[in-house]
Image 1 (cartoon, rainbow, N blue to C red):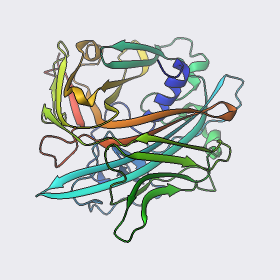
Image 2 (cartoon, rainbow, N blue to C red):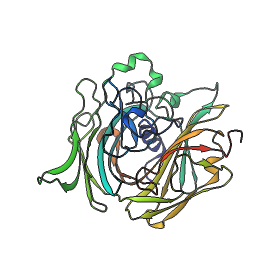
Image 3 (cartoon, one colour):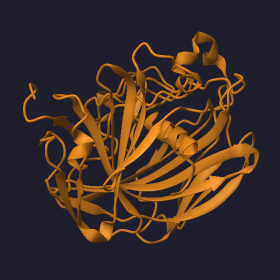
Image 4 (tube, rainbow, N blue to C red):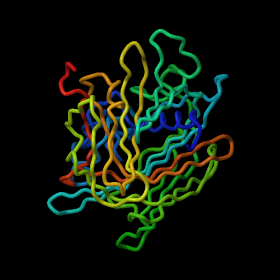
Length: 365
């Protein structure tokens, strides 16, 4: 089953810190994101700057589709007298889309490392989907788990209060990804960054090139600091195109039946569909859903049981990508997940297949 549930819960929380939960509209260009954020790798990510984007597209055609992000997570203090999990997430994206027969590649690198109290979550499986429920009864005992990472509409550590805002994040010093490709001048097409010396956080890095070819080796490396050094590799995922429905953006989902999906193309790894939502009363908190399919199957379905608990009329931000992933258990109790992602395209291949869908054929259902 992979890593233990507490680790999966915390890593899922870390992944969801990249995306605003509650399902806002996806970003298309930088100006769709909050002030000081940019649309990178299916996420609105903090740039650490206060000025908004001028509104021009960064990679030619519209940028990656994905749910809005609340910014980089705030880092809670590690020593709170509670069991602490030390988790990291490093995500490299290599995407391609097409406009008027022209190919537009783009790539990006994100990294987060945090120390968080052990979250209280319940995991269940519905078909190809894993549901991680980190909700509690409204007004109930919050308990240690609720002091951990929010699985929904706030940043990690947001419950810690203003005093935690100055905490420096742990880091692995220089973090990089290399897919083995060369540019026109014979130099390596890589991405890498050092953390900000003031707060330990990594600002997103991106370039207008593909990072890997499908099926090739993608190497991740961290030289090491508070987070131990690491080096590992995954197989670079390939490009898939959603054929049915033509896109998830703007779709209204009938929660009484499964949602069938079909796609074309070839890829190693998995095709992953992700979204999260805020639970309906009387519970509070957020539920995250991740559905993983074999790309070679060409089709799959999200079960009705996944949609049934979601409040009717709720708009969800959904992402679809192929993925190669590996979990690393490092010294000091650190668990680091590295992921190489390629966005799944809509049928027209001019945009991502993800976006905003609504649960319920009408808002009254």
